[in-house]
Length: 282
Image 1: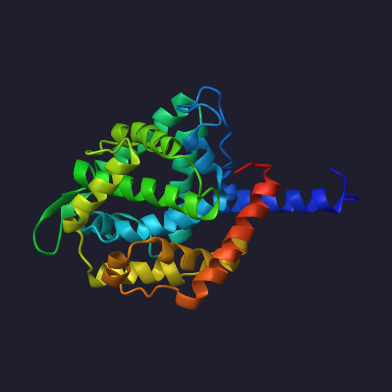
Image 2 (image 1 turned 120 degrees about the vertical axis):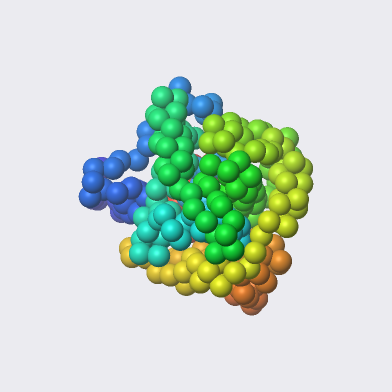
């Protein structure tokens, strides 16, 4: 690549910056190479949705906000992770797991799932009210999965492809269900309607605790370094806008209001630029 081509130089700089944000280059971590022997075939809904960096970041933040409303998921994060000290690191590891299970060779995906299952078996304890919790609880895993699947897809529909056919949306849930079941989640939706029904049914499990609101503030107002940190406030506004009103109330979050429209325009522009850089089609 010649430096005399400023457009190509800019494209490569963007790619390098994004890859550095999502891979621990200091430890030799490299991007996950797409495999023809992955769980999912090329050009299928899950691979298209999960390929869009910007909408996945928005959806991931929205999903994490919703997950913190589940007392068991929240306690596991607070007691068994370094989320407070290294929020970006946790998000990066989650993003890598999704990349491996979506695009990596089946053997690598299986190994990643087993690694997570092994970690989950060690995450257990007692809530402040004496209720036992475990990261292997199928219902807790179901909430984590449903929030991720719904928010990833909703961010994609909002910022990338609003006219995605319902049949393709249902296929997305069917595909993502394969990973969720391997992690032990139950119930697991295989259509959008099933996901919405499970989401409504599990709403009674949620609690708006001070700890949940503290983590929500970290997600929304926390700052990370590099290029990601520069756009983080815009992504946070889009994520808060994405979650249901009841969740914003429970987390003491205000809807972006007048900032909603400019944030969406900015997030859409960032997404279009990154799709151009990676030569992706929506």
